[in-house]
View 1 (cartoon, protein in one colour):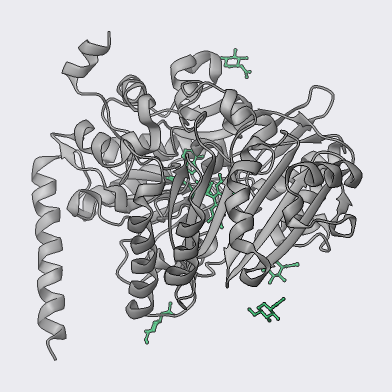
View 2: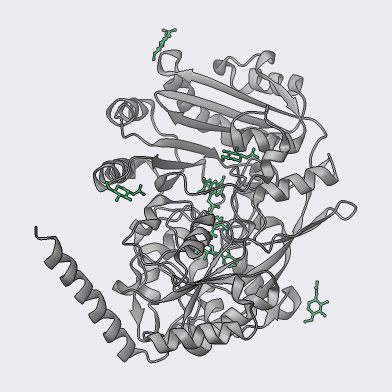
Length: 540
Ligand SMILES: Cc1cc2nc3c(=O)[nH]c(=O)nc-3n(C[C@H](O)[C@H](O)[C@H](O)COP(=O)(O)OP(=O)(O)OC[C@H]3O[C@@H](n4cnc5c(N)ncnc54)[C@H](O)[C@@H]3O)c2cc1C
Ligand SMILES: *[C@@H]1O[C@H](CO)[C@@H](O)[C@H](O)[C@H]1NC(C)=O
Ligand SMILES: *[C@@H]1O[C@H](CO)[C@@H](O)[C@H](O)[C@H]1NC(C)=O
Ligand SMILES: *[C@@H]1O[C@H](CO)[C@@H](O)[C@H](O)[C@H]1NC(C)=O
Ligand SMILES: *[C@@H]1O[C@H](CO)[C@@H](O)[C@H](O)[C@H]1NC(C)=O
């Protein structure tokens, strides 16, 4: 068996990289001593029960897996954290950052663990070597305070989106919060990257509704909006997690919703005109009144049209008759519910589970995941959809397609208002979301190459220059960071993923990074790099 020699060579290469790295950058912990010093530094302020290391494999592994969503990044060969700190107080996050700086151990922050590429708990191929890192897990920092009279709330980063929905619903039947559909996502990562969901056409993203934040900066100091300044505060609201410090809590604006809203789920198969309906949907859904959100999920040769309408069934029925009679919606399709129950509908595809399910954090890794996504700016012709359904979607390894409409206020918010630049000019977001349960590399390769293949095929029909992508649908295929001296290369980041996620906002994000984390302490495979000195002068 060639197995033993191969493992040995691989091991050797990894060891070599670490040694080289240690020589280039003495500040980085490449030695057991530095790691011990880091752990010793933590233990001065943090109870030992909150720190897990591989020395206690079962409790370490239970904590590591507790919110790791993607099975692809908990395989035996994934590089794992040298320690996990389960913070229960804000000071624990400050200590972790300070000890990390002092002893050269990088810190990855984890709130809900839903990162598509596992960046909050795994290191995949950063700078072609394994950089030792610790995970700062915020899952226990999850307090939520809703102030219905002011229509505001504070939510700690470890709270889930479902917990926030539940708390808002419990405080008032006429307030809501615009966030995404999966209830177990963490508020920390979700708001950091934007946060898109069923109220986006009416009220924008989560990030458009953030009023303040408490952050641990790269020096371990606690900052809020007034002390950090508007540039730093701008970057936090959509610049993607990790790059600008540890967000401990967010103050958000709650938005008015009717006491009764309406949802429906209508499934049409291919022989029920699914392709014609999707073709028409592309123009109808982004142009419809802001009170309507109508998304489409395509799986198993069926298109599932799911709606939220901020009003009663009668109003929704009339609107559909006027704008989309072909769908054949009837009043029997309506379910009139509270807004919080509409979040249950999008989270669980049914309204018949109680809102308490929003509090269910059980999210042990459930499947292997690879996703890619696009922005569509011109309707895709019907014959192209025919080809997609026949040549791609009939294959057993086909992924779920998700079509999420833009328009409404998504088009009127200026693209530089927050780092999220995908505003006017986009009809909808198209996501290729592949998930599978089979263990082994053959299954993975088949699924992943399907996603990459369709993505390639779609190139002529989607946004270009750049081919724009939403940062919360993280995709390492776009490219990963490289070093330029001691810090992440600006140019490499810009051309590989920076322009695609952030378009014209990328340079400003890098300028903020230079101000708030010039040594590039908070970094990962796709963190925002500092601006090189020459470019800094340009931008003055
Ligand atoms: C099943 C599923 C459904 C989804 N549905 C939607 C959707 O409907 N709409 C949508 O917009 N997105 C959706 N997403 C994407 C989701 O918004 C992102 O994955 C988001 O980053 C998750 O946040 P998290 O805290 O759970 O992730 P984590 O994995 O904990 O963090 C994501 C990134 O942010 C960093 N980070 C985390 N917490 C902090 C913090 N407190 N301070 C600074 N940096 C931090 C991490 O280091 C990592 O880089 C979905 C993802 C999944 C897996
Ligand atoms: C922000 O922090 C400053 C002190 O740094 C404090 O005076 C102020 O009250 C804080 N603001 C909020 C909204 O917490
Ligand atoms: C449509 O196709 C499905 C199988 O995909 C079949 O079960 C159903 O009977 C067909 N319906 C009509 C109206 O032909
Ligand atoms: C929580 O959700 C999981 C699956 O996601 C389910 O198996 C479990 O029964 C749920 N727990 C409760 C108390 O409903
Ligand atoms: C996958 O299967 C291999 C052996 O076939 C096994 O060793 C491994 O533990 C399995 N992994 C998972 C995540 O089930």
